[in-house]
Image 1 (cartoon, helix red, strand yellow):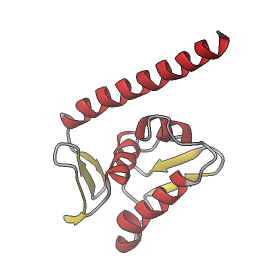
Image 2 (cartoon, helix red, strand yellow):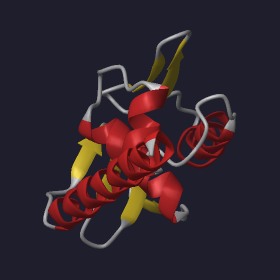
Image 3 (cartoon, rainbow, N blue to C red):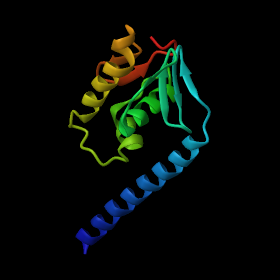
Length: 132
């Protein structure tokens, strides 16, 4: 009996995480364009540009960048990224977030000679409000 209760609680937690994600995505669709210096992100069209140059990003990269830009200047923890972008479905010990951050840096920072996405050792990541 106890195993069933634990399983039901896990399923309920997953359902709630998915509902939060759906709500957040619908709110993001109506959100205004986010900017950090010359880096822009338009949630409605799902476009990213730096200095007028459009940047091709995947859906997950877009969601991570949107989260960082919405909280520009603030520390965004790995747990917050997992919760909001992956709906808590990925193991916190995995390096998947590090891989996505590195890929984002390669697309929105390095080609433009910028350093907007900062690693806060032991804490998380931060996007510089000035866009780097």
